[in-house]
Structure formats: C-alpha cells, structure tokens
Length: 427
Image (cartoon, rainbow, N blue to C red):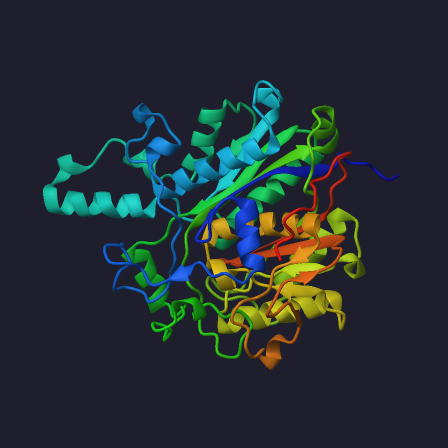
C-alpha cells in the first residue's frame, strides 16, 4: 500500500556569501560568472597566509542582535542570523503570527562552529593569563549556537538541532528539514548551515594537508577550478545559507509562493578514510540513489546537478564516477558554484541548496567558472562559459565531507498553488 507524504516546499531563501548578501543577487552573480574570490586584504586574518579566499561582507553583531546579546558572538552565527532573517522575510513568515511556534523547527549546522573566537580567546589566555578568558566563550563558539540564536530571536519553540558533519553539515540540515516535514513533526523548518573558517590556524591546517589551491597568487579568481585539468585544491571561504522549508498546504493556507519542492534526500558513509573519498565514488552514488528513491524519481528525470566539486584531484574524479554510476552515459547538466564562491565547508550545502531551488524556479543553470580544459577523467555535461537556460524539472545538490559523510538533496517544481515569478533569470 502506497503512503502519501506531505510535500515540503521552499518558501524563503537567505544567503550570506563572498558574492554578497541575498540569495537572488548571489544567484544572478553566479549566472553571470562573477567570482567572489580575492586576495585577503591588508589587515585581514589571512593576509599573508593564503593567496585567495572567499571573504563575505562585514557584519556587526548590532545588525542582527540587540546590544545585550552581542558579546563574543562568532562570525559564523552572525552570518547565519543574517541569512535566517532574510529567509524568513523572503517567505513572508513571522513565527507566532503565521505559524505556531511549537510547530516551527530550526536545524542550522556548522562543521566547526566558532573556531576564530576560540583561537582569539586561547591567544588571550596565553598572553594575558587565565582571567582573560571570557565567560561568553562557550555560547560564542559552540556549533549549535547559530540554531539556538535563530530560535531565540524568532521565538521558535519546536525541534532545534545542529548537525556537525564537516562539509556535509549544511546539506544534512536541509535533509533533516525534509524528514521533519514528511513525518509530521513540523509545519515549518528554518534550516541551513554557516561557517567562518578564515583564521590562520584553520587555513594552515588545510594547506599542510595539501587541500588548498596554490600557485594562483597573481590571479586569485582563477584559483578554484572544479573539474579542470589544472585544478590543485579548493579555496577556503566563509558564509551561510538558510532556507525556509514548509509543508505545502501550510504555505497555501497563508498564500505563500514556493521556489521548489524539496522532494528527497539521501545519505551514506564511505567507511573508507578520514580525509579521502572512495575512489570509485560508491558512497556518493549511494547518496544520489537515496535522494531519487525518497523523492520517487528516476535518473532520467533529473536535469541538473550542483556538484560538490571542490577542485581537489581525487574528489572531482570520484564524484564524476559516482554520477556515471547513477546516470550512465546520459549525464545531467553539471556545474560547481564553488568555482565562484570558494568552499564554505559546513555552509556550502545550504547555499548550494538555495542555488538548486532557484535553478528549478528560474529555469537557469549557473556555469562552472575557470573550467578552461575539462579533465578527461571528469567528462560530464558541464555547464561552461555562460549560464544555460531551459526548464529544469528536477535537480540534485551533492555535499561530501571529511569522515566519509555523503548527502544528496533532490529538488523539483514547487507544488504550491502560487510559485515564484520567473523574473531576473540570472542572465
């Protein structure tokens, strides 16, 4: 006997990335091939440490929090608050007015939380002594504090959690939102991820692990090159993405328009190595198949994949093999927007989920930047040079992480009575 599930529709989007604040503007920038990567300016924490980084706009605690709550709040939480404010405003939803606070959930994740705050406090302790450590350190650095502060600010009293699965954290949060809606535990879920890793210790750790792009100091925008023959690592970046996911009939009852449905999700574990994927991409393929299964679609119905595509030698090849294993010779259109945003670690999956929702809504696919010569081992239907336009019935977003965590999210046409107008198509 078949069981019907309530549709989960995305009604609000908020992003805070190296391309600026605002999901629509960020999407338009991506579709125009605009890069947010640059050399860290003088005075930045990473000045002299890396040649290219994805640096988001400045934000002060006073912009998103009252003065009494703004002490020692890490940048990852501030960016998440900004993105959540924008997503809820975009959805036209006020908790308590438009939704029962106990039926609203928040799942906003981070791979590492407030590492920059912790590093600064550790430096103060060493240089000034034990009395220099602030009592606000713990609520400033804990990975769950983005979710907690969003709940406090907006009066959300339902399910609240933060998933910490490195670079898959944001995507895991969106998958959790789909589960909460599908199984009746929430009417609305504010979900996403945020990361602020632009500090010297984090950057040096990735650099010494040979994960970061190098040799591009004269052209920082060229450093992130997913699937390109000359790729040699990812560009470290910061940012946040938040989505409002809502039961479709709840959205219809308040007259809200949908961008796209969150149709399905899939997750797996490589159980292989802490910092390398299975070379054949078996875990990634399992995640994509899971998303198709829970979404009730076949591979032939997918028109676009927003790839994890970090521009590492091993990762891009493994993902290509996974796509081939699932889709055979008919590759959907593929692009990696990390070529322009850099790798936001735990924030990437949420930002890229927003990109997929807009791609479905607008019928426009952003290109992969810097894809000058496709690596023969990454031979897929890459969107290159300029955005590609045309109807997109379904799209996948892939996120993979240290530890072997794999998540794939499936999006389709919004099932609400009203859908977002296809304006500003990103071209």
